[in-house]
Image (cartoon, rainbow, N blue to C red):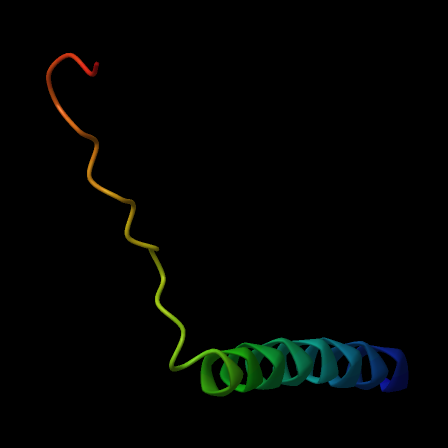
Length: 47
């Protein structure tokens, strides 16, 4: 029974770490654009 509780505690620790890392990453990179805009390509033949 005690082994099962330790196992559940470890699983909860991993889940909490993953969630906190996700939230921290979202806060840190909140202002950064997800896709960078590319320059427009010039159409037609160039001389």
